[in-house]
Length: 427
Ligand code: AMP
Ligand code: GLY
Image (cartoon, rainbow, N blue to C red; front, side, top):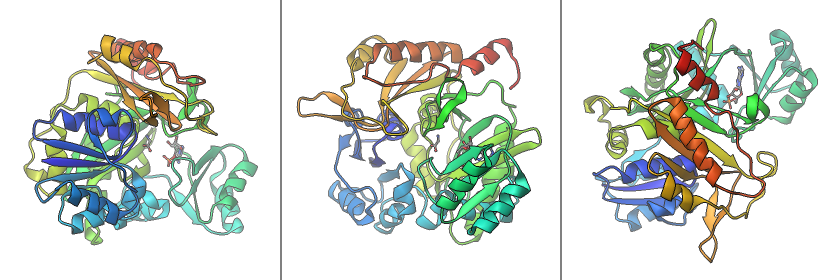
C-alpha cells in the first residue's frame, strides 16, 4: 500500500519511521514533513488544513482504495480533512470533524463523558464573569481553568492564585472550570474503527519545561513506556470504563470515531479519571509507544480506517522499554528562537543507531543542506533498551552528542520510573 502522512512534527517522524519498516508499505509520502522525515518519506508541500488540497495531493500520488492517508495533528482533523479524503474514496486514519470535537471542544467532551458514564473531573462550562466566580468558588484552589477550544496545549491554567485563574477565564470566550485531579498522569492511546477498540501500551509525558516539573506547561518535554509503577490491570480498566463507552457513545450519536483516541488520565486515590481526550497520537508519547510496537503499523492503521479491526490479530510488543527526550529551542515555550544550526546528527547515526535515534520535530534544511531549527520543540531523541534505565542512558548519551545553541532539555525524563523499576516500588 501507498501511504501519505499529513503533518510535520516528531510524532509524524515516528509514524513515518514505523511505516517505513512495514513490509506492506510500498511507498511513503509526507506533507509537509520536516528535515528528518524527508530521509524516510518523500516530502510534499501542502496546506494541511485544506481538505481539497490534501485530496488533490493524494490523487496526484495515485492513492486509491487500497492505500492509506494518516492525518497526524488535531487542527486538520477538526477542519474536516479526514472527511474530505474519505469522501474521495481513500481510506483515512483519523476521525471526522464531528468526532474530532472530542478534542476540539472540552465542553463537548464533558457532555459525551457524562452521557457515557465515563469518570472525569466535575466541571462547569462558563460564559460570564459571574458564572466563572461561582465555579471557582465552588471548587476552591488549586483552580483548573480551560479554554473551551483548541489552544495547542496553552489553553489550560492550573493555579492556586484566584486572580490568575479569573484573568485566564475572562480572556476565554467559553471556559471550562473543573475540579483539581491529584495523582500521576498516564497517556493511553487506542486505535479504533468506530466499533472495535484496540488499546496500545500506556506512556507518561512530562509537560513542564524544566526538571522537577518546574516552569511553564509545554507540548511535552519527554516520555517513557512502559510504566513500572502502574497497576497491570490499568489498560483493561480504562478500556472498559473510558475508551469503549466513549467510542460507543459517539457511534450512538451518529458520529462514529475512527482513528486514534488518546485518553489523558489521572490515577487518583479515588480511581482513574479522564483529564482530556485527544483525537490523534500524542507527542512525545507516540515516539516511545511506537518504539515498542512490533506489529507492522501500516496494516493496523489501515484496518482501523477500513472497519476491520475486529479481525486484526493481537498486537505484539517489545518486552523492553523506551525513553524520549525533547530538545527545545532557546526560549521555548514563550518565544522560541528558530534558524539555529543543529549539530551532531551524523555522530548519533554513526554511534548510537539503531538503539537510539533522533526524530525531528521542528527542523528544516537550508540551501546548503544544513539542518536548522524551525520550531519550539526541535528534536525528540528516542532510545530503546532492556530496562528504562538502559533506554534512558542511551537516550541521554545521544542527547550529549547533539548541539543547538541556546537549547534546553530536561535531564530527569523517566528518572524516577527507572528507580521504581529497580526497587519494584509502586507509584
Ligand atoms: P489538558 O490540555 O487538558 O491536557 O491540560 C494540560 C495539563 O493541565 C494536564 O496534562 C494536567 O497536567 C493539567 N490539568 C488539566 N486538567 C487538570 C485537572 N482537572 N486537575 C489537575 N491537573 C489538570
Ligand atoms: N503529549 C501531549 C499531547 O500530545 O497533547
